[in-house]
Image (cartoon, rainbow, N blue to C red; front, side, top):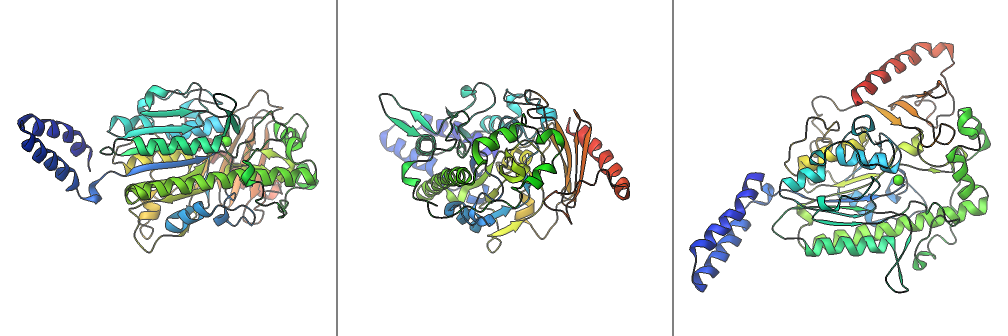
Length: 476
Ligand SMILES: [Ca+2]
């Protein structure tokens, strides 16, 4: 259904009701209204949107990406029914900034939030704001990490985060993932059925509970999962890889090193933490399955764009680091699975390797809703990559992007980083230390050999540096 049709439906109903005064006439009129709604061809209806948005999962924290431990059967099923992007990345790898980029379709340099505050972009230019203005019933459930939750901007808003277990009135408690499920189901079941909807389910799992020594606290019924299965130690969990980092990232005040000690500094702790982390992931996966099943029950799955992704990647002890922030592959790559009813049959289950970014989600969602994107939005609708894979988009899809991260607290804790990311090369600049890295990803996909001081790569370094400055200027 187009915007115009949707907007005219309510006055039409009112007009029909206005001219019908007997009970019989009212019944006939009601049937007429229903018939008008039913006769809108399915292809013209605007897609609903279910955005399943997890926290701190990296690109391979799902079974279908080749992870040999974690069980995510529901997300794997979505991938088999849709498309999985194996080079999806974020433009800034930290919760608050990445979420602002999701909402605004803008790089940090433009939306202006460098940490956990509200962005400067007007709400009317975010995808939930635009959808609501254009007749969508819009909901947000779960984590919100951009200042105070703007509940009045949503038709249905439930915001909470920070702990895996939430105290309930009385003496009870509920797991955050369970609460996500209950609230999301309430949205789906109480929404007005004549309006298209957009629901973001912002899971807190598998983010760590920062001040808690246990870090990851799954539900008791999950504890049997992975109990006897050793979690493989990453190839980069070595002293050698640590010593290949820039010197300022090796020092003990670096937050990545601090959190590595919280989670991974003994083999026993690594196993315990990773198993609990994967249990949290599997719990989220089950909720994804329940919500998709609910769409099926309501007969709207074939009118709903379903997206699963996360806000940033994660170091699982790689380079003897924990968490995210830095522009290495483990931190910037995220899972992305899309099931789109517009996909041609026969193309389901494909894997796509273009650089799709967090800033592309807003324009993609808006395009699926038939809503135009504001001029200041920087991402791009990526649906042509999977709707018409044989017809390359014009202009050609990006082959590189600009990555940015601001200092958090101090340069010793989490320093500023800027990077040019390509599939064959990565150039990083750490301005507070005027330190550069250049990796040839064709021969060194694990980013182990910094070529920035290699005289034979001087031309590559200069080109990459200049190109990054161009993209950095465009991001503003
Ligand atoms: Ca996060």
